Structure formats: structure tokens, C-alpha cells
Length: 276
Image (cartoon, rainbow, N blue to C red; front, side, top):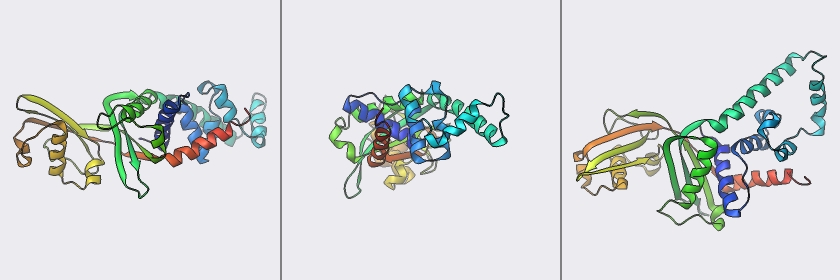
């Protein structure tokens, strides 16, 4: 399932590219995002194994002096049995360490969407590109964050001055199933991937699960729009007459994050690095 940290990583990748600086890795962003949110998970992430982090990350995520004593107790565990609570924490850290390693290498088909938000709150699409081939999240999110920002041919490349107006959406795709009928799907639940033949040519396109609901379309309006997107120019009441219409449904809840939320986190990260 997509998370706000995934969106923050997309912002980190985009802004690092625009500002010509190194970007944090997905694991680093997830660790810092959790600690910034002040959750128990964040505290555990701060104590994850050193091999997952650079020296700079180790210093940033190091325990505060107030918690040093618990680390000292752990260091004497060879001669002093761990209490039930300490044993539980140790097990939790070990489990979390494994989950951090796994997250970076989990693979999903995915889409990254960039929108601009006007002062009045109106949302405009600014770029949306993804893939149906499973991608390791670290590489896939970074790659498609940049591709959708710079290479969506419907728009000019996103510029640094636009950053404060941006919103990022990440959708991880799951549950691909062939539809028994072009209408056998639910608005708001299913994304659609279609292919068909028209005038001897093969066409295809997709809409993510949230599109039809956001646009207020019926199922038929969604299919006609999707076929238009693919390049079909027939009469809208003749959409069923195309040859070999194939519809595949899939699922995936989109998670969004605005620039201001990312910038607040980034300021915290930079502030935590002061004096290092």
C-alpha cells in the first residue's frame, strides 16, 4: 500500500534533481518520516541496524542523551538477562530492520501523479506516468517521479518555481483481473486498462481507480473517454462496435502529499543536521 513517505520520497527525488543535490534513499526517507511524525515506529526506525544507513543518517537518528542509559543496559545483556519488555523491544527492532530492508526491494506496478494546487484550491494535472511492470520501490518511485515531472508530453517539464504549488500522488497497483464484460467493474474501486482494434490498428490506454470518481463519470462515459484517450475517434454511441475490446481491472488506493507538508519535514531534517 502506498504511504505518505512514498510521496515524500518522490518530492525528495524531484527537488534534489531540480536543485542539483544528492537525494536521500527511500529507506532514509521512510526512517526520517516516521521519526518526524513521532510515532513508536519512528523510534524503532531510529534504532534500526547501522548497515541500513550512512554515517550521516546514524548521527541524525542517534538516540538523545536521555535515552543513552537504555543503550548502556543493552550492552551488558551478555551478563544480565533481558527483561520481558527489553526482549520485546529487541525483537521488534530486529523485525523492523528486516522490514526496512524488504521495503526498498518490494516490487509493484506503480504510477506517480503530479498536480498543481491553485490558491483557491483548484487542482490541475501536471504530469502522470507509470508502469504495469513491477518495480523495486526505491528505483521505481524515483524514476517515475522524474519521468512524470519532466517527460509527460502533455505538459512542459516541471520547474523549480512551481514546486510550492505541487501535490504528489502515488498509486501502487494490485489485483489485476480480466473483466468478463466491459461494464464489470466498480467506480472508485477499479482502475481500467483497455486494448482494442479499430480500423486495423491496435489501441490501448488506462485510467487509475480514482479518475472516474473524481470526474463524476458513469461507467460508459469512463470507457468512451478512455478510448478517446487511446486515440479512438468513432461515435460515442458506437464504442461497443470496436473489435476485440479487452478490459483488465486493477486496484490501488492513491496517497497524496502536498509540498508544504514535504517542506516542513525537509526543514526538520535539515535542522536536525545542524552542527554536524
